[in-house]
Length: 589
Image (cartoon, rainbow, N blue to C red):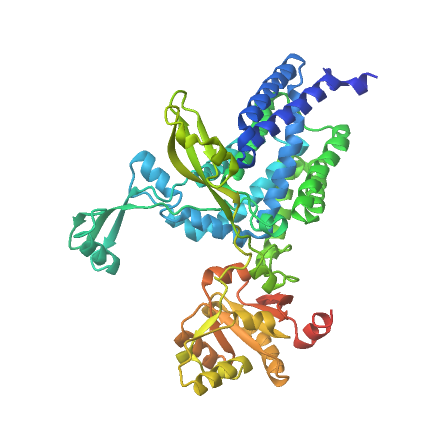
């Protein structure tokens, strides 16, 4: 009976109740600060804080701190593994988000503002964004494994706390960034730098620009700028958008981190009492942790994290026991997890994310993704203020409640204050926005483009009407064609020539069979023409913004096969199959 009702000398039943109540309290407080529960915020927060405090007192009195710490370890460890793996699945995508933070007007403006350092910049880190992306996701996964198996808990608890301080700062910055606010920025330009010369001229008429120093060597310019606010912290990459239809809002991300900090603090303050798991403890701690991972896997619609977490945990425990003199410890266990992560990251960097959450993934209907946005709905409300007690009331000006109240006649008590607009249904952009719009100017059309039937129709129609072709978009054509092969490239100069030979073999096969094959890239027409001539690759080519090309494919180049708007095949440059393979395994599905 003792084993059932006691856990390390503590009351299992009572402390289980206190932990359950504690989690309810945390949930109520979090709900209270969510916009969806604005009307009941005071009640939710008050009740949540009350039962949260009472449950903490109960856990202290009945010596359940270590038990609560164990629950926190399971929740934090499971989430850290999933969160790290989501980032590791697409390290290039996460690096793009870090690049946004490293821009001069993004995260750096906080330092400029707080410490009076207008010349401070993080832009030098942009070149290392991919390195930091990989490093962060590996740290998350390793810490998740260590906290679950109780390895190096003092080091792990400190690292968890520091990691969460870092993440919380990022999400706080994101949630509280005001794009209308200005900050002082200082830039130094070479004397003949065109930008510096332009700033020198602009300073004569723009009061926000001041020339601090102007010598024969350099120009130092102080300028009041607006922050570059990052609207999405990228906590779960594209996984949230791809699984539940939207990312966490900056406010939701911040509260997610507050919750994690709360649970990490339980681990941190009990670190001296946490011992490495015994074999018996592993038999129930690790299965429960895998259930937590399973829950998040369900949320993200990807169950590979369960398998990945299992492999990492088993490998870490096995190395800890069988690793010998040098690796038979928790450092060796951590190193084994690092190696597993490196292998996984190396694979996705060489190819594409194992799980593609982007709207251009295999199976996606591009046309549907272009029109899956939600039209926002808003309501204008009249705000009246009570002159005696300051109470405010909001009314829909066309409602019966407003008309019947005749509040505008009660001038001794009520006074019209202002009008506010409330969001009823949030606007949500379509998964594929207008940024995806491969185009070519009419005067740039060459024989390669004119070989496409839909362009021939456009050109012939323009001739009949005696007008010039302005611009041709590929967007509708890609979503309506029975079959089309599309080659995407972010940078033509970085295409591997061996990969290009495989692509050309497919191109000539499709040309022979009169199947459309087009290329979409981010290059000016002279560069495109030079590339096609040099490589004997007369492919119809269109241009698109590089930001969207980065979203379409991580590899450069990437081949996509589309039929009636649906992506049925997507192949990274270093894994281009033959035309016959595509015909057999992709077109006949």
